Length: 154
Image (tube, rainbow, N blue to C red; front, top):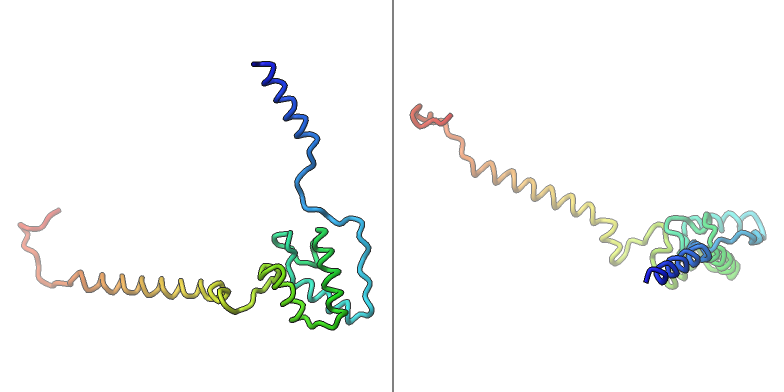
């Protein structure tokens, strides 16, 4: 019994040492993108900074070193060269990856709740607080009549 437990511990330790670490695949030896002119380069950088890497949680497409970010940068450049506008490229990527790919979600549909939800909660809280304070004022009547000393409690 003890020997089998020892063998299992050794196997688990060996597997832990041999298994690769779980991390995003990074693109270390990728060639840089080649742009036709300065206008194309500036448009590309502006667009890629507005898009989010679909693998990285909070990095733009321009800042990410993940392999999928490299692939998306190549795809965005290809779509630009096909003559698509920035809006068309964003729409294409949203259809493919969802609203998550945009750093600034569009103000439509359920996203309206994201944009105006905090304001609605604040206004609702203020209304409830105002109603509570107003109701409390009316419940406790103010009396000028003096309570006799015998009935006063200390």
